[in-house]
Image (tube, rainbow, N blue to C red; front, side, top):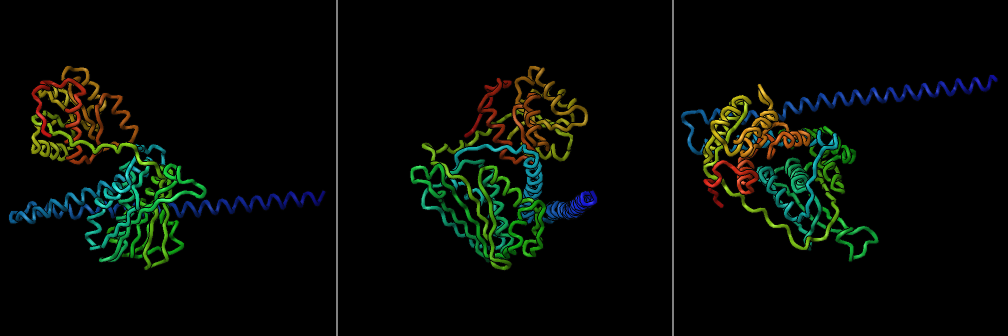
Length: 425
């Protein structure tokens, strides 16, 4: 009896020790997570201020009475470049949220890996050129095709190239090598369907300590690598890249011989057979002339800037600052297209679109959501409300023109005086 009591007591003590140990580990993890959250928020503030500073300076430059054409051109380039950087930071955060909630959308199609690399190199070229790096391409000996989302995979490869440029001293070397292989036991006849393609991005830069090779893929991981300190980052790029590659059935790994010895990141993707007929290149969108566009946005700067851009491109534009104005001005202006914000002060954009569709002019107009809300649920809500298309802010001018041109070309609705439309190839 006494022996059994001792055993029970020992078991109870052991269970308490295990519970205390688990509680201690949880507390330590929570403290570490809290520290990383604080570091991330501080980094986010720093990264957002970074592009804002040169934008403010460039605007100040444009306002100077003595600024010449060369200086004005410089200011415009700075604003465009830094605005793109801000958009990239926001996109990274949104992609993290979509992946963590399982709402990321992949538009899969057969892709030539060489074309993806060309697109990624184009996006990373400004960073590579800034540091005067030499880029060496080592393509595969045969065409390589994968099944994937063009934008997402180009994003992954562009991120690896940008990182290589950031963490390599000026005048360094970046090598991009493409290879193909097959799993053990795969016969040659089925290699195209069962093999894999690899893209390795190598650099002669700062390298990675061996104990950090997996940690660089952790969320919000921030390493004190001085070469890239000024260019920074949110610490989500590699985490995001690995998750995107995994969603494609592939893998992303990091390799380095240590600090100062460069690094090598390898993307592995399932190989597919080349399509019998290569997908045709997208046709150049026609540019509508004389198209009437109603811009609805409560942000005065945003609305006026967009209106000015569209007017320069040849559109006839009217502005509305809220839902009530949109309905009244729409009835008078009879627009062919409406660029409609969702977060309006009186009536939300979904309801405005529904009310537009109840009028003759609104049933004929093309209504495009132009909003900061860009999740899959937001796009579904826009479709349900009657929108023809959805664009997420900040939209590029070429995307807007292409969207309007495609709507004209497809004639999804019988537009008011559509016969008067003219298009130019």
